[in-house]
Length: 158
Image (cartoon, rainbow, N blue to C red):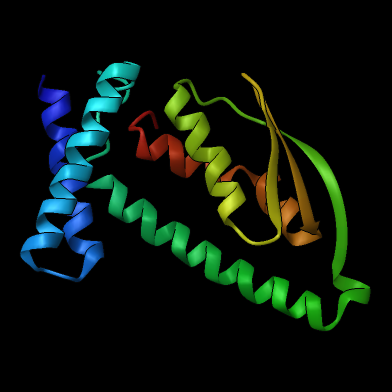
């Protein structure tokens, strides 16, 4: 029950922060949305110890800021490659080893890669990801393991 409550609190705060419209009708619609998502999450049995919405606590905003910075850097690199494609664009599919233990960590890793411009996660397996990288610098960044290490830190494993 506490996980459902924490999910409701996190969703409510997220909704309040992102909506920007604070009128009675919007409060009602937001509350209805939160109740519906919590109910669906309960029915799907996706809220629990491993899927606790407050599992990452204070580390999550730090990770988001780091990921935002990575997205900005990749946007600049992809923009540069779009303007001068001859030397910079080296598309390839690579197999990225992964040692994250939890399903949430693996999915967070795959989604973070896809959010970063110039890379797309094609396949998520237990011990590796297959990723399409547009630029050599993107591939090198993935092979360095920095993003995986950051997610391991987010999960408090390292």
